[in-house]
Image (cartoon, rainbow, N blue to C red; front, side):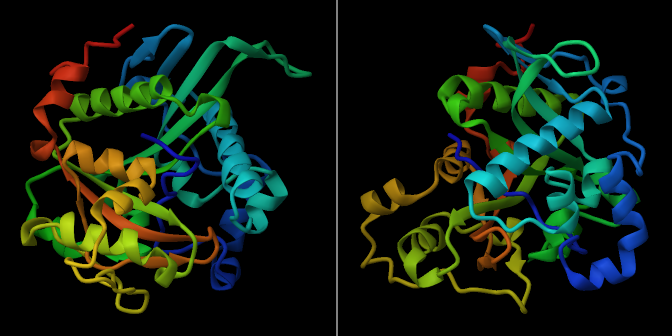
Length: 318
């Protein structure tokens, strides 16, 4: 239930936008020089260090800025070296996938304790082989909003559910050799435990289809439009300036079996959990993808998945 990139999410001010360089350069450049021009919150103060374990693999939150940098390096390798993303100035300079949201997010990481890196300086450390970025609504509200807001108008969605706690998911990737059921299950176990600990009511974020030609993605987009559209209560629409229609084929003309086969594993995984898809797609030329909005109310998650991880997240507890 994964793919090289889940979707990085999107921010109100993208670091690769020339206008951002003009207005935000003094903030971005120090962040490139040493991640921590912006102070990273200590995730361990909020959650137990270990959220789950399967064999040599452990899932937990990044413990410090050094581990966030290592997660950024993994993202760079997947997004820019393996995939077709075009690195912006800060990322290219640092050889890390960087944006200003990294400093306010929690970073879920999967660590393989059987693969130990021995740096030139410092103690040996186990390899980070997977990561997911998590941004809670209370944190986003204090720091200018969600990353997704640069692609989708989520204001109405949040307004309709004022009493609920939202969690934004993004920037997910897994090292090629670890793209298997075990690693993905551990990532989702970590997310589920995090959701329970923070009493999250709904999750959302952008998910990606590979390619920037909506016509070539007509089958996948049309399937999502006809079979996974969010009900009005959970609906959100792509920003008018970026809106790409998804209903490119009629429902009767769809080959459902072929469409499901063509969908990225991550999106299929979200749908199996009970997720909905927003109205309209967005072409992201910088990352070479076409993005859709995923909305997943916790109340809609299939009971069999809750049973799989345990209602209190105990199945893979360390």
